[in-house]
Amino acid sequence: MVLEVTDLDALTGTALESIAAEYGEPVAGVGGSDSAEERMHAEATVRADGAEALASLVDPFDLVSEVPGVELAQASWSSESIEYDPDAEGWDDADDGEEGLFLPRDGDDEEGYGDTVAHNGKNDGEDGDPAQRV
Image (cartoon, rainbow, N blue to C red; front, side):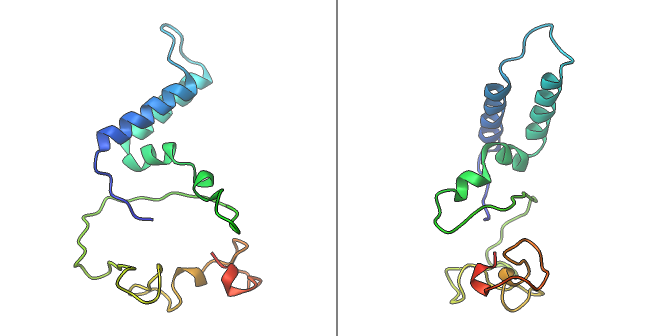
């Protein structure tokens, strides 16, 4: 999934509100608890990085829990700041291709992303039917 953050302040503010709801409002004069330290760390993290703010708001399980035939085995996040140029080489537009959502880019294998990770999360040769690959 590729997305563009169009209002970083709104995203960060919403993430901070979510943290406040999770940890409760800070109590004046009370500090040093593990919960207070966790909250301060979470707040600093979402202020420093929009991807972390998004990750604090979006639960990967919620994204796929209603999709039939899919079970979330593991979720991870990565992000980078880039300048989007749809005309630049290396940007694939799935709407333009006949191969579907995962089009190979320069250096990728011919079968797209699905050939590199087996359905069991390991590339051990015991990956079963190609339709089960993620």
